[in-house]
Amino acid sequence: MAVPRDVQIFLAGYPGAPNDTDKKANLDFYRNERPMMPEGLTYDAFMRRYSRDYEELEANHGYIQWLFPIPEQGVNYRAQPLQQHELQAMIADESVIDRLLRSYSMMMAFYGIKVDRANQNRLSLADDHKARLRNLTHAPHNLLRLTRILKLLALFPPLSSLAAPHVLFFTALHSEGHLDLSPSIMHGQSLERWWVNCLKDEGEREVVREIVEKRGGKGEVKWGMKEWEGWFEARQAQAGEA
Image (cartoon, rainbow, N blue to C red; front, side, top):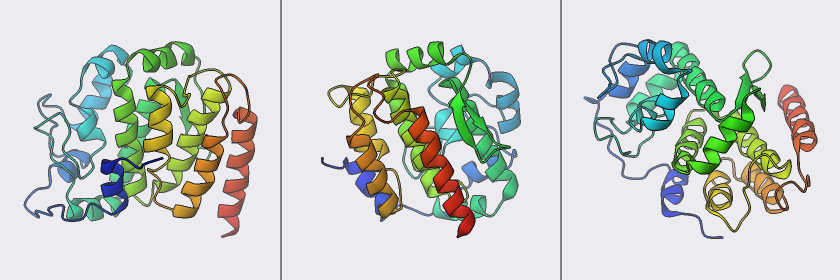
């Protein structure tokens, strides 16, 4: 299956992307020193006001570029594409990484998924997952948001280990019947063509792709939560031995 052009550019490391050292809007925002625009809110102010306001998070299309900056221009023309010098500075700043994890946890909650930061960032279904996953089904622009989120996770080495569990958790949601990611529909195309390919490690990408391709139909439980838990535990054990 052909890899989309934007993902090819992502995997190649955004060749030719500008690196203007005078531009540091994303770095400043994640240091809580500059407001996102057009909302005019700093990071901490935005999170206090909207982190549990799911109507706002659904309707507002401008914040996602600020919370998940990548070297691509999004629909918010007042959000700056991530510069390479910003990426390096953000990777080295523990407070920035912590805020990025807060952003990820917030958006996963928006999709009905809990991130247990005290337990290796393990994913599980939230109490309100049925309503939240129903919203994802009926608001497909969230597929683009999820692609941006995955690209960011993969770009930041301190966060890159979250990408594969994320993709496979959604695969398990499909297998358990919570979400339809069948190959014949848009949601399944996002999984197979975009999300699987937003993994930088080629070996891991192939392992995940094989699981995704054998996921079966919605609700067939060919690779469900039991399999995800087993895979996650084995992966964490392997990481601990490295």
